[in-house]
Length: 229
Image (cartoon, rainbow, N blue to C red; front, side, top):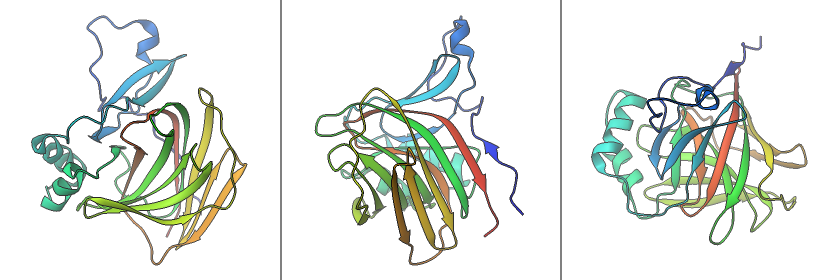
């Protein structure tokens, strides 16, 4: 039986502190994503909670901040998690706080590509483990496709590229979804791009957002519909 959909628009755990006297528009429900790598900011747009990564490569995050995030997410700190998050090859990553484990179902969000030095990117992370390893499906404007990547041991590696190519405009909202059923992965963007892949085994772990370190990207309208394994 299909389990009840979980709307991930959390009021708690905001990334950026609100001002003491917020405007009415700033009172929208916040996504509350926990930043691991990169400069993530919560804001409101037309009454909706939006999370934006500001594309400032900068320095690796402080180990103390990563350890605090790991404790919040997993209840403990794995040194490998800290090593992965502070590695020179780490990319911008933020994690949803109230989805403890996602192994089957659909994870969707809307994204807006704003800018980037080489290309513009948006990705949905899944299978994030306590050691900091994860998978992600991403769209970028350089290739104009969906691709599946893995991040582990301080580096990323591509698993497969989608064969369909569509150039999405900057500044517009687009929809991206990842569906997992057993070892079958289906990722879609705007119902125009479709990517399918057979994973080597089942996945389980935290979910969140990914971008390149120099990308400015916005995410909103997060929808998580878990299904039985």
